[in-house]
Image 1 (tube, one colour):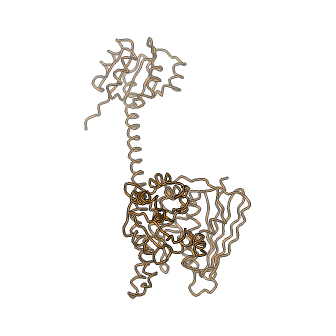
Image 2: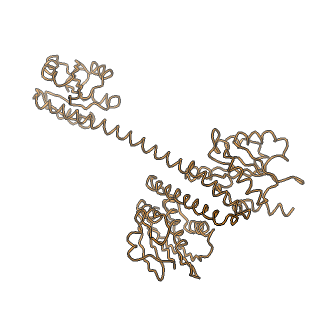
Image 3: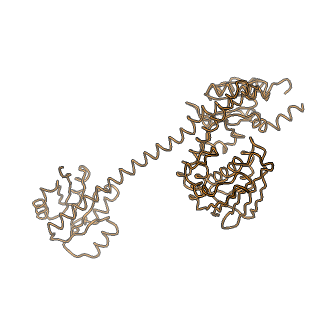
Length: 359
Length: 140
């Protein structure tokens, strides 16, 4: 493996120093020298320099002034300041304004200078590598965003057409005309749509920064109950919301949390239960919203309670996606909320959540 | 306007959805006539062509968002410059399969859009939206 070519620019008003530097280091580095800051800038504009050494005491422009002047136009090369004087003021200035990597006193020690240049080059490489990684990540991020966008449009649009056709079949009373086939198509289509929606919810939750909007729990819960009970009107909802104060939080995530919990409460009812009931109480104060969602449904087995918030956990009996509660937990994590669950196969399940009030 | 028939204009680049939604509207008897356009441009042409024939103009428009060349939002940018007499009479709703929060917010923020309906189109949602209007119509 050949060593990388390190391009070093050395600026000093004393020709002797430039010559001495060349003599010592020409085998290790590709060396460019300049007799003044102006000359140095010319080289910098034409050659991709990795490390710049500049003498502090030069007529017209000092080393620090030179470094300051190129901080916007040439931010990448690593800077080393050389000086024959122990000049505290220059030193302070160099650190505060010149973005200096090392400060070396003249006359220099060859080994020390060599090590400094070597380290400076490593720093240069790390800087460039980091920038390339960031560009790469931004690109991946961008692609992921476009992928999510295309799932929400291109992939879902034909599926929604299929569901539309099934609705037409129902409207024209043809649903039972082919045995159970239409029903099976409907079940599969709804399941696929559910997965697409949950996947989108999950990605949006991991990516979006929390937003702060005012939340009216009465309205939110009312709308969600209406949405989820449209196809299943057997369940009675008792809603008690005490919101005397303004609540500010992340509208999308809070909706996702309630939507999943309400949908679960309806989905996992006992089929032979005559009074299917869901009780929702919300108590809002200046610091948080305390929510309890309780149902008299199937309940959760004790041995499952610890796993229900993990991704793709499904119980054998019930056909969930294994995503709903995982997404609830992830969304609460993002907004510093908490969730706890108590359940019993006889009496049903209660989820208790707290969401901080960001007002 | 006596003897005038209620018309709906559907704008959607997807001919299957156009067919499905036309059928849903037809089966629900919400409108007497359904006008189908496969692009925003076609929709604008139809309206512009008939501005002097108000009996041919739609009373209600269902507009898709994701369409090639002119999308729903671009359509609305041109649509808003149509004569006030027409805009005041004709209601417009968006009908889209989008789940994109940005699109949903943008649509809801547009003053010309009375509602964003999500595909598939359900008769009951349309009935709720048209509710008041149709009560008054049946009262004529």
